[in-house]
Length: 538
Image (cartoon, rainbow, N blue to C red):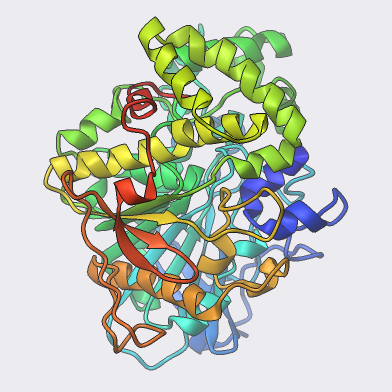
């Protein structure tokens, strides 16, 4: 489980080949420090930004100013505020360091050592330039299956990204994870006071967006030109955020890499999960749970593999997100979304191919087959039997379709049907790691400009820069197409909108970035897997 969790955070081929439990690949600072209040007036005024909840002083490296560990809530969710909605900030005239990464959310200790319940902070990166024009803002929500990850992960350090793209500002935000962020409690005897507990992680993300909207102008950002961006559970998060009532005043665009609302829970599934953990811990009430140390709660959830994720509660989040998109709930939001050709290969290598094969067969029998009609089961069997690949890869391709590829295509289909804009991609660059191919997260070191994390083999520098440029151009204008004068290779890159007839997507291929039809790329099996998107799979 440890390796899987690290992969979910890091998303790099390097992790698969070089990390051991003692390597600590996710903590960038060997000695953690906490930001302090500055009371003696001794600080660099040129690096200070006044916000509603204080003045924050950053650090400058190579002409990039970084502000780390800024709280975006008025009180951290500790003590009596555990499992309570995030508290908005209060006016504060104090001056504070913003030098160090804050604690990560509660999660497995061997994944993120520096952690705690007091975890609701964000980081900001900006170029140190004389620009007076308000810059587009890209707010990144990390992935990690809703149970691991954080803003302190080295992969998400955006110094290199801003050096290359000084015309945007990047913000990375934290949120409560796992049992602390997604635990249904309202059905318990004293649960009426915890109506939001099932979707606190999403509410934390929304509070961070509110803080950005109200404060980012001080950093030189344009609060009216914000793009929310994520990968994996982060991508699922940003698509869900677009469905929250009142959210659209905080952002105009969404970038979703390998994630959709597909992995969410029903109310019934959430209650069953809570009941299981209550039994494990010997608890009857929320009051009982509040007496238990956070580490023990996380340990219980981890050992018993509890499926914590956002809940389709019909209140904060819609009962059927796909249907909501089709009916036009996000038609005024521009989307850039896509998936990788071999998503689940990543997890197959993490588990070990034989163990993954056993997992795939067991899950198919216990989860998939039990939910499908006989006709639907026959379609899935036909899809699996049509593959001329090793047995483990049959399950990899099947679950790539179920969890990532088919839901992504449905998001684009529904957005187009509703009259909204979706620029869709299919990432086909293959790793040098045997069997990994275009696995989940393979693109992350490229997008975040961390070539040192892809030492298994060097990726084409022009391709990598072009991909980043497209992301930035989308954040700036709502269209990721590149004219020849701004394209890194000097050649125009026209990215067509997805439509339900031509189904054009951008093939992100290291040798040739080009638009192609979905049928040419054979992305989704419309007859034998697309129907699975009517179900939600946790």
